[in-house]
Amino acid sequence: MERIPILRMGSFLLVTIQVDLYDRLALTLEADLVQMVSKTNAKGVLIDISAVSIVDSFMGRIIGNIASMSKILDAETVVVGMQPAVAITLIELGLPLTGVFTALDVEKGMKLLKSRIIVDNEDYDERDERDYLENNDSNTD
Amino acid sequence: MRGMSVITWKTMIVTLTKDLILISRDQDVVPYRSRVKEYAVKIKMGLVNQTKLITAASELVRNMLKYASGGEALIEVVSRGRDNGIRLTFSDKGPGISDIDLAMKDGYSTGKSLGLGLPGTRRLVNEFNIISEVGKGTKVVIVKWSNG
Amino acid sequence: MEYNIPKLLQKNRKNIIELWVKNQLSEAGLREDLMSNEDLRQQSEELVDSFVDNLTQENISDAQSPDFDTVVEILSGISITRARQGFSPRETGVFIQGLKQALIELMEQEINNDPATLLKGTLQIIRLLDSFSIITFETFIKGREEVILRQTDEMAEISTPVIRVWDGILALPIIGTLDSARTQVVMENLLEEIVATGSSIAILDISGVPAVDSLVAQHLIKTVSATRLMGAECIISGIRPEIAQTIVHLGIDLSTIVTKATLANALKFSFQSLKLEVRRTQDSKTQ
Image (cartoon, rainbow over all chains, first blue to last red; front, top):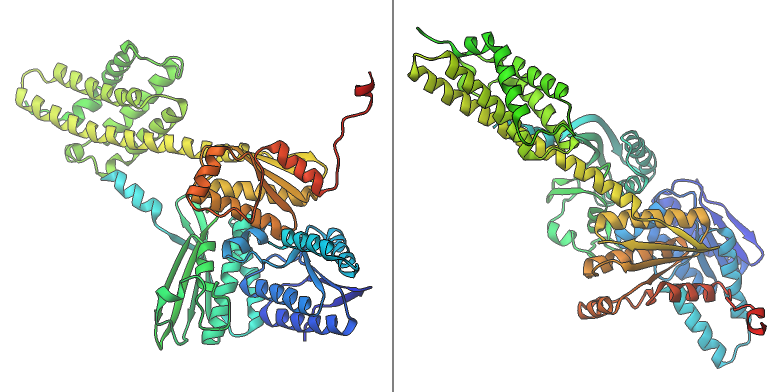
């Protein structure tokens, strides 16, 4: 069966979607990725969709699911490289993907993940935690 | 009047090309989407409109598979005067929709989904028509004009 | 003797053209600036020829007759070109009315001993030419509409420049009303430019937008959301106090969007986000 490869880079997982998605393929990716996060104890997941020309409500939901599931397993998810036409279509469709971090490209996505994980690892006092939460809010809404 | 006859001719939709594709499996959506894209490119539809149309098509194919385990998808290149467009018709022999108004509401779904399917799809295209008869099937027709 | 009006007109086509052209040239509002007298004569000749050639006893009282297709085509062509050249609808109307005048004058000269036929013929010609002049008005308006449509497209294109104000910061000043079509263009240009430049912040300045209603606000929110999906941040600046008032009065929620009063403030905010600092140089103080 067709599968989308998941690469491991240190404490991050990298998925580059290069094929046209259909529902079952997307569901397999969701299952594989969550398995992988758990197995490798990954701290971050980076999904590169720059080669994806369409994302409909189902695939949008899968991306949201991956982010929420990874979050439960203590990993952050960043979606990078969404095409302008895809972004416009998702908004028109009514799917702003709230709760999913986004970045322009893999490099910027990596940077975002690193910055978030460093904050995570710090022994922070209450003031730091508040800063972190504010930072978190401004990024997710 | 002569002027009137010119106007009716302008707004009449003429079919230029037809292509019928059967949908029976999940994967069928991939070749179907690329076929729609081919036609959209041929009539010089902009990238954003292409993406909206293909996304709408993807939603409707999923509905056909989910509620009627497949059906027929017709692709037509249509024209009304100066504009060209793509008309897609999805017909299935599924259970039909009992309350179309309810199905067209944002957030409504009988299946396990977000309920964005039909109302979201309608926002992506220029024309959206749905005819359904309980026990007989559903037919959805959408049109996207290349400059719309 | 019995007069055949179509035959009479065909025989006298030279005279008709002369009469008509003379009428037009003596017209006070002759637009020599828009069209040379030679072109005018050529246009007139073409129209008179096709008119008298296709005119018969049967169709003289039927403007709808397919015999007049070529006449209508020529008329429409003249009308559309005149609309594009900048003639007023009145001037184009006078052009056709002039032909009617010439035809009637000619019939008056030729039919001098049969008032009944003259009257009947005159009425027929008046009705026929009136129908034709309606067609010219319709096509004239259509020609103008095409000009308007083209200009609308051009305006949408030129009125949305995306400016690279700093490395990683784009600014897009919007001037004029924001409707759905325009938002689409703005959004596309902005997102394309974000990809092309790899900018992580975009500033949408609405100082030049006359009013913000719930629809415009919705368009702005959509643009901001789409920018976020791509991984960039979008700031709305240039919000005038009146606009802030309407937004609140209409109950529009902009709390999820970063808004700034001026472009300068938005730029300052962007610098902070990118951890950049703008400072006055030291030596200007010491001197």
